[in-house]
Amino acid sequence: MIKLFRKIRQKLLKENRITRYLVYALGEILLVVIGILIALQVNTWNQQRIEKQEKGKLVKLLQEELKENLKEFESKQKYIENSRKKNLILLEISSGESTSEPIDSIRSYAVQTLAVVASNIKSSRLTASKESGKFSLLNEEETKALTEYETALNNYKEAISKSYMFFTDDGNELMIRFGFFKVIHPALFNGENFPEHNQLVLSDPELISYLRQPETYRTLHKNYLSQSVDIVWLRELIHLIHGTLEIFEREIYD
Image (tube, rainbow, N blue to C red; front, side, top):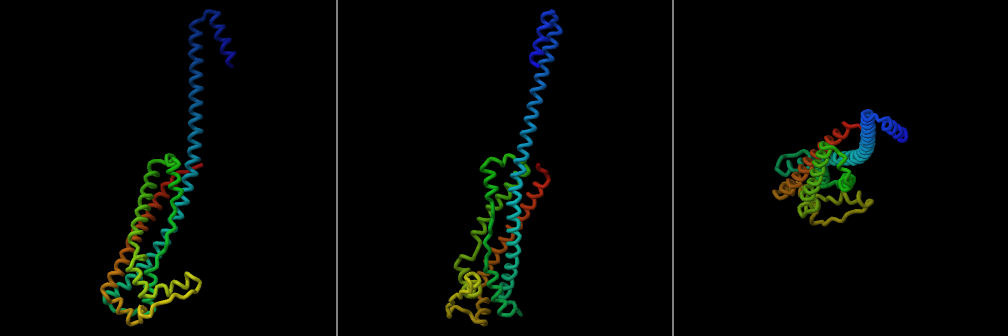
């Protein structure tokens, strides 16, 4: 093709047809420019296709992690909500309200309201995508949604670590008085019994009396507050995950 163009140019020059030569030369330049533009466009299309495929892979990984955490948070929310309701019953008794609840049920409520569930929160794929620079593949709306979710997730971890009463002196006192480990210990350690101090174990009348004490009410109130904070945070995280998943699902990836 190049030899053909060269022969045509030489022929036009020999025939002294300058005008036609210039028109031909301009046309040849135009063809070259068009060829370059087409090549650049094809390269752009290929690059966009590759980026879309990479983004699809990234989004799939992030979706999986979000759905795993969603399942975890929904399960924990259900558990904490049940625990909160049991704590509310104990607060009602502690406040002086009469109750028809059997004493065994009251002891059971105490165990349920004091137990905590460890969260298996996953964020490695989100962190890795940011550190690798792949976050740049996401659009502004997707980036904003993930950033808000990540911020809420970190704030939740910090808030819950400060609000749980389980590992405090108040929590420990309640567990001793209500015989928490007498119920939990066999389940955790293959039927192994937990020794209780006979002067600290509360009889049925003593348990009700202990519940009525102002200090017991204050302790149960702290626990109720902790549970309420947990539920509020879980609702927010669940809302943010649903919103982020909806944004991802608007776009189809190859």
